[in-house]
Length: 129
Image (tube, rainbow, N blue to C red):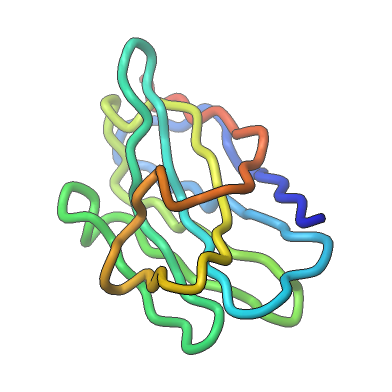
């Protein structure tokens, strides 16, 4: 059973940066993808970025592309989300999730919420002066 634990959230001023971590434990049966999502107060959860296990290919949605970067450290089973030039509207709970669906590929599908099965508990990010 795969488990995901996010960390790295906190309070940051506008224009600042944070790096979120998603540590995976357990056993993936084959290829998988890890995605980052967020949910702001009163809003629906949205996908931000994903990375594929087999080749490291990534997909980042246009709304945060250029500010948010996903990466991984395979040796540590950890995926990161580097967030730069943060804005108050980035305030949200950030989640990572995994999918092992055989048909799914991150670079084509993007971080679609319905394709992900295992979720972390989330980490709060507050962007405020």
